[in-house]
Length: 583
Image (cartoon, rainbow, N blue to C red; front, side, top):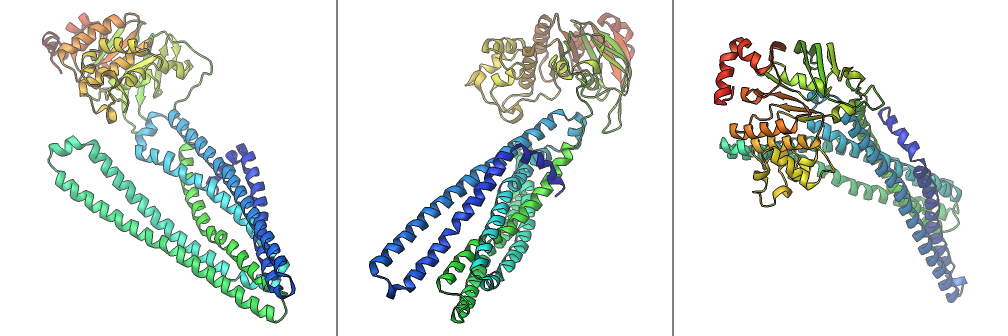
């Protein structure tokens, strides 16, 4: 139960709901006691039928029936209110816990996401939280209900007949034991079924996402066979679970019947021996036993829910206890203008131990453009990650506007950087909303304007719904070049003082590249721009160029300087500059 202690703060937060639910439960259980007593009284009236006038008997029975209806309705209404307080409380806790996890996900660093799978992260914020809610809501509610009902009913039974109470309760522990054992089996089979379902879901998700590759390799039949094996396995797990579930009903009916038989048998013997005054008490006890049977049966189910919640909350706590490596150190706002300085910067990735940068130094003034060249794995993207402070340097110092980057408000820094990543990620939303992601309150005119600058406007208007076209998962509706240009438009509309293009023109043709570069030059006259590229043509208008190799700067300077000083790069550089080829 130690993991579930994390939820105590939510019980305190919603203490009004919790205490109100407990009070309502107590009152509801008191009202449920009236029905057995009124039924017993009615049987006593019928026993005295020879001594009471018929009209009086009918009148008394009608009064009892009326009171049974009234008390039952009141108890039912109070039970409804109980659910409205305790179950609603659990929904509030579920909402808060999901937000707590989501907010934690937002502050965790890049290395965390490299070490954890997306499916696992999604499962913890959805399935695990749902399991925890079952504990906060139904498990707590039924536990309180069972405790109060058992106390109230057993006390009332003991007052009437201690001896009959003792005998009538004998089968109930057996019911609780068998239901607990069965619930444990159901829990195990349910876990196996859920795990198999996760495998099946993962398989189908990958097939649907990679359907083009599947068709290209013509392996539809093989994957269909694999899918049939998985679904057959899932069916068998589902049938095993259904068999266990199907035993609960018959088991409860059998033990309820056994309890009733004990009451009738022992109650009859006590009545004949004069230990109880009338048969009405036997009827009362039968109703009392039936009132206790369901709560006792629930104990096994509640125990299972608590076990599942404990396991789920433990998994959740593992993430909640992770401290982010990068966090905001400055509470006040720090405006960003755009000057960037690297002083002998070195970076070793904490998750892999790979040295990405070594002794990198350069200065980029506000409004200037820097192009970073180098082969794959040379450290180009690492420089960009440091500017957005996704990682902190191991050695050296990064200055933003002559201020150490750690002394800049983290959120102001990232709001001041517009990034077009290598892998253009678009959301399953309209093209307009994907562009507006950079500026939520942007007008449609602004959206169209930046789309034109990114040279994607003409492509968008060719769609039937134009800018209202809903994109598929990860922007599947668009081609690679179109996705890159929509991402560029999204960055431009942000109008941030720092613009970063991480190989953002790799999927467009050279003619379109020329148009985009011209528009970017006009757009970013007062914006600090960094372009990471494999294309020499993308760097021709940069004010500064640096060439990286194995995390070190091997050449840097202006475009003209590098034409002669770049060494073994120079001949290839000049050829690509003239012919607009791709390295």
